Length: 142
Image (cartoon, rainbow, N blue to C red; front, top):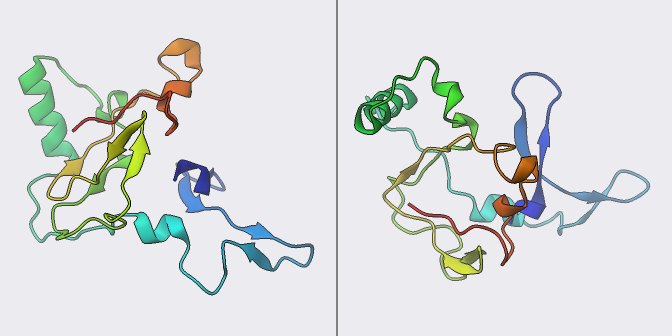
C-alpha cells in the first residue's frame, strides 16, 4: 500500500500522491489507466463534519492535558498531514481484503479518527525501517 505512493514537494509541506508507471511517450501503463488506482480505492475518503469538535487544536490540548505536558507548538508532536478520519464510514474501503501492518492483519478503524504522531527520523538512528508496512515493521495501534 505505501509502495503505491510518493511525497511531492513542489512547494509547501508536500502531498502524498499515487504512483503511476509511464511509457516512453508519457502514457500510463500501470496500474491499468482505465480503472481507479488501487491506492485511491483503498484510501478512506476525507470527511466533512459540520461544527466538528475533534480538531487538531482540540486533540493537541486534550493530549497535553492527559499526558501532563505543555505543548508550545502542535507541530512538535504531531504531523497532521497524515491524519485520517473514518468516523463517518459505514464500511472500510478494501475491507474484504485486510492490509498487513507489521505482519498483522490491519483493518481500517471505522468510527475513529487518526492523529499522526511525528516520529519520522526520531528512532533507530533515523533509519525509519520500523515504519514500513512489511512483516518486520511495527504494527499499527489505535
